[in-house]
Length: 176
Image (cartoon, rainbow, N blue to C red; front, side, top):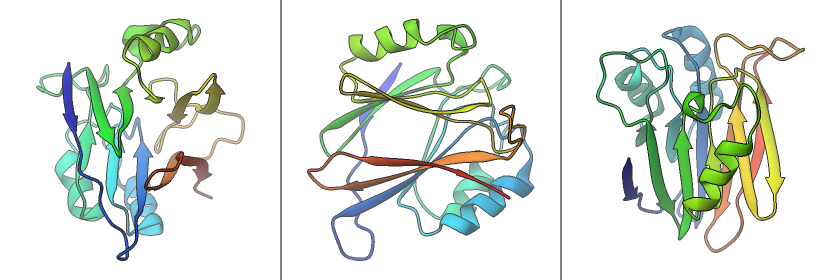
């Protein structure tokens, strides 16, 4: 497990931060390029696995720091399976989710988030977006940017907006 702090970045000279959260791009570049272009500027890009080697490509498009975790399709990589990052004294737990049985239920990943004292648990793997508030723990999944499985069939991602000292705001967004 990897743990570290990410410095609080300043967007436009203020004390606000915009984080782009994606998952399950599976090496398909067209959708991720469109998402990044639509949301720029962002202060941090988080990818929750099944990247298939496109980390440097995404970072060059987003022109910001990038946090990555290993997905079940990311073979032959030294990416961490789980990662904890701290933003403005808030702890985020990042994982792909396949090792926590997220296709069945959220019990194990919820308990792991509590065990780690996380404020936000982020995972991918299911290709279905999710935003859930459970007793001061936010659990989210941006869905898939390349292979969506929810009813509307649209590629999805999450934008997190954060103002220093306040609770983060999350929004699931879709490509048309």
